[in-house]
Amino acid sequence: MQVRKEYKGSCLCGAVSFSVGGFSERAANCHCSMCRKFHGAAFGTLVGVDGLIWLSGKGLLKEFTASNGSIRTFCMECGSGIGFRVKGAAFEEIELAIALFDDEIPVVIDAQIFTKYKANWCELQSELSDFPEARV
Ligand SMILES: [Zn+2]
Ligand SMILES: [Zn+2]
Image (cartoon, rainbow, N blue to C red):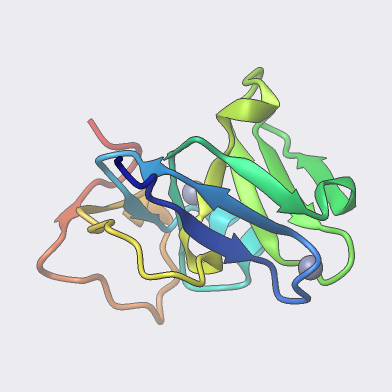
């Protein structure tokens, strides 16, 4: 019998928790100003997931729609940035903030994107391919 792989994550207060069964092949550090502000960090890193199950706190998820129509989801209790989806995407298409995972995950960051908008005090990582705007 094959054991299903499961990777768990949670927000800062722990009220929101989830598990996933797998990840998108690619993941990039995004330096756009929306990711910086949403995550309160030099950049945000979001990853596509398979088999997402909300284990707790789904009712605490709140959404913010940015001026470009993209939708950011966060925990109402602690403010942790949970996820992102493009304009018009269904809730199930949410990409998750990689930093929320409590388990080690088999994801390799392979690019840095929207670097044209990076903070002046943040150094880019020379080993990663660099896209001034979206990945092409
Ligand atoms: Zn929380
Ligand atoms: Zn971004």
